[in-house]
Length: 127
Picture 1 (cartoon, one colour):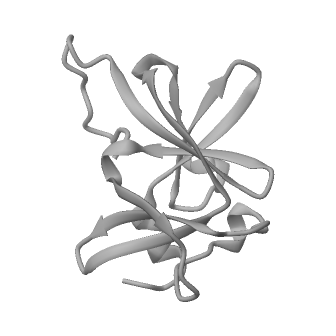
Picture 2 (cartoon, rainbow, N blue to C red):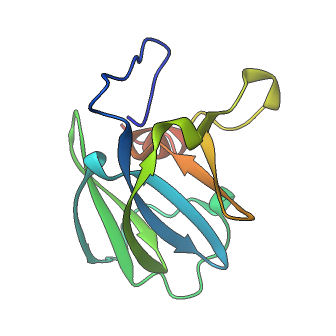
């Protein structure tokens, strides 16, 4: 996960690799350590309407879950980039965000929602 309540960065670990991806016209990010690979999507892969409407959905982010691999359909992969941990902001509980929305990163002027991939499955009732 990008960060948690008990996270305290070690001095040499001041960045996290974030995988940036698009669903529709919206840019999202996730901790690249959660990602096993990028694949072509399949009809039974997870799509999360709350992230936005897919334009094509021809790619899938493949990630590890306790039950095996999870696959999230996305429109495009924009790459992986190291982001300073100090630039990541956790969403407060009072924001009422979905459990998979763990934080936000301000990429110049554009806010990027950071999501937890495993929690996207829980949001769909898949375990």
